[in-house]
Image (cartoon, rainbow, N blue to C red):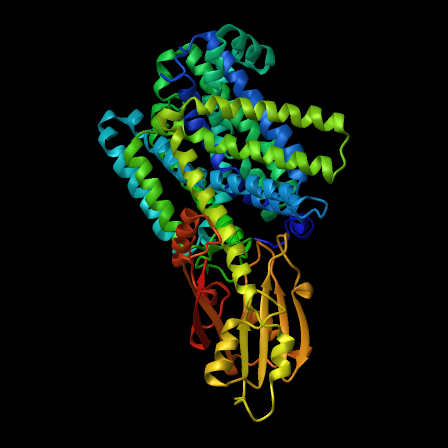
Length: 629
C-alpha cells in the first residue's frame, strides 16, 4: 500500500488498482445480500413477504444505496481527503487543524472523531461475527443435519483467521481482488436469472414504491429502516481506504461492478420471494440451483473471510493512527511486509478482537440475532462523518450556506432516521456496540486528558536545555565516546533520564541527541521534511522527527539519514535512553479520582517507547521515574 493515495492512479495502471480495491474496500458491503432481505422480513419488523411489501423494501434498499453510498460517500465525502487519506480520524485531524477554531470547538470535533473511532472498533467486532455466521448458515440449505455444526464451524473459521494474522496478509491479499470479483459476478448472475423470469420486480426502482410503503405502514416502515441499514454496512470503507487506492479506482469499482451486482442480487431475491414466499428463510442461497449450493456456501464463506480480514486490518491501522494522535496508549506494532507500507500487526488489538468476536458468536448464535446489533455502530459512524464533512464544507471549502444546508441537511436527515431506527433494536443486541463504543470513548478521553495532565506535571520542574549547557564544565563530567539519544516530549527541556544520568552517574556522552517526536495533523510527512536539527554546542544536538499519523515510526532509520547534517550516528555506538514513567495517585489530583485510576490502569498496558519507535532492544536503557497525577 502506498503512502500517498492521491498519486496512485497516475503511477500505476488503473485496472489492477480497481481490482485490488474490490477485495479490500467492498468485502463488507459485498456480503450484505447474505442476510439483508431476510432481516427485512424478520420477527422484529413483523412484515410478511407480500408483493407490495417486497417492492417497498427493495425500493428502500435501492435508494439507501443511491443516497447514502453513491451521493454521500462516493460523490461528496470522498472529497474530504487529508492529503489523500480518508477515515474518521483523518477527517477529525483535518477539521481540528484549522487555526481559527476556539478551544471549545476543537474539543467538540475531537470528541466527535473519538466517538466515530470507538463506533468503528465496534463495527470491526460485529462484521466477522455476522458475516461468517451468515455464510456458514447456508449449510442448513444443503441439509438440515448441519444445523448443530454451524456455530462450531463458524468459531473454527474465526479462530483460524485471527491466528494467522501474525504471519501477515501480503500473499493472501493478492487473492482478495480476484476472488471478490468472482463473488460480485456470481451475485449478478444469480440475481439476473430471477429478474429475467419476473421482470415486474423492477417496479421497485421507482422511489414512489418506497414512499407508498412508508405511508402504508407508518411506524413499521420506520422500524424496517433498521434492517435496510444492513444493505449499506461497509460504506464507511469507501472513505477509510481511499488512501490505499485513490478515489478513481474506488469510484470505478462502485459504478462498474459493485452497485449493479448488489442491486441485481437484491432484486433477484425479491423476484424469488414474489414467486415463492417460503424461500424467506434463506432467500440468498435459494437463488442457486441445488447442484450449486455447496460451491456457493464455500464461495460465500471465503467472501466473508475476506470481508472480515478487511475489518481486522482496518482495526490495526486505526489503532496505529489513534496511538500516534495520542488518544490511546502505545501498542506494540509489528510490520509483516518489507514492501507493503500498510501491512501491520498489532497483537493486543488482534487478541482483543478475537475474544470479542467469539463472545458475540457464542452468545447470539445466529446471524439474525447479531444483525440487531450491527446497524447502530455503522449508522453512528456515518452520522459523525456527515457532521465533520459539513464543518469542512462550510469553513474550508466555503460552500454556499444554502447549498450546504440543502446537501448536508438531507444527508443528516437520512443518517438520523437510520440511526434512530436502529436504536429501536437496543434491547435485542443494539446495546452491544453502544456500550463497547462508550467504554472505548471514555478510555480515549481519559488517556488524552491524562497525557495533558502528565505533561503539565513534568513541565513544573523542567530544566531548560540552555541552563544545563551553561552548567557543563570541562573535567567535572565523564564523557564516554559514542552517541547517547535521549527521548523527550519537550524539545526545549532536559529529559528526566538525562538529569538522572548527570546527577547520579556524572556522565555525559561525547555526543548527546535530545530527540523529540512530533505528530502533526496530517497522514504522512515526506522524508525531506522529517527532521529538524539544531546544534546547541558542547556536543549536544537537538533533533525533532515528525511522523504523520499513518506513518510507521523508525527512529534508528531516520537518525542514520542525518549524518550529512552533523549527527554522528553509528548504530553500534549509539545508546538510547528512554523514560519509563510509573504513575501514582496524587494528594492533589490533576484528574477526577475515577479518571485518575483509569489512566493509571491504562498506562500499565502501554508498550515501551523503545518497541513503538523501533529502537534496538540491546541498545536501550530505560530509566524510571514516578509521576503523581
